[in-house]
Amino acid sequence: MYDVPEQQQVVQEGDPALQQPVIRQMVVQLRAMDSYGTYDTWSDARVLDPLVLTKERRRAIPVVGDPDETTLSRVKAYYNAIAQMIERETGLLAVPVINLTHEGFGRALILVGKLVVVDKILRDVHRFGFDSLDAVVAEAGKLLGKAVAQVGEHRVVAEL
Amino acid sequence: MYDVPEQQQVVQEGDPALQQPVIRQMVVQLRAMDSYGTYDTWSDARVLDPLVLTKERRRAIPVVGDPDETTLSRVKAYYNAIAQMIERETGLLAVPVINLTHEGFGRALILVGKLVVVDKILRDVHRFGFDSLDAVVAEAGKLLGKAVAQVGEHRVVAEL
Image (cartoon, rainbow over all chains, first blue to last red; front, side, top):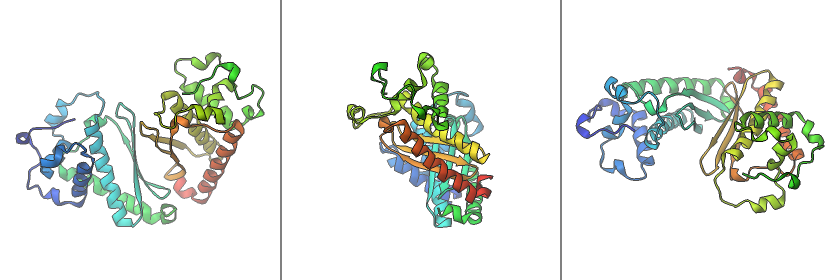
């Protein structure tokens, strides 16, 4: 877990990336998984902030470690958000499957029908994060583009 | 876990089903996961025995429960064995992905390339088992047949 007091926040409240659909969807997902209501009084920027790992923050995280529930919820929020976007673009159900060992190794899949549209190896999940929100938008956009193209190419399998 | 003393064994030593490829492969898988060497002195029939749940055995297992490592190893052995058979029949790599909550709910997938060839909802995994070894052979054979047919139909996706 990497929760920071507000004053050290890296994500600025007015960051235009906060308006990007994938980021908004991640906020929805993170708030949905926040069963203790920790985020209730937090701004969207603050909820997303721990996902941005500056060099300093990366240095502060041990190289080896087990991911905790909060970190896992961020991984899930990311792939759930991408699955949501795939659904919107293709009109087909997209199912995220996150498969991790306790040590934080594994893979993230997104399935559309019988088609695997996202297949990412996950490593060192306790260090899960991005350089910036813009980096989230860029990487998610790439995955989304590939996924939608694959559905287009193999629509029959995606509709199975 | 459901380990029985030898005298109560349901699987007979001479059971012809022990010679079936999928059963032999399950034994290989179970022995491979047996890191403490518990099975070293056990016959194949005894290793497989807890997978056969007679009505009496089913009754003895609580309705609600968390699956332990030994039970999970049996679930894995089953799907790993099927993945192995798919590889043999298709000549393509088949990857099993078992995704379970601690409560024993989830799904078992087998992926060939970008094609999902097996997709089973898992429930009550602490009660994982079959009526007999013949039932294992029959069910595995059905899954295998469907998977191989799907690969044949969507070979392009399976080779991605």
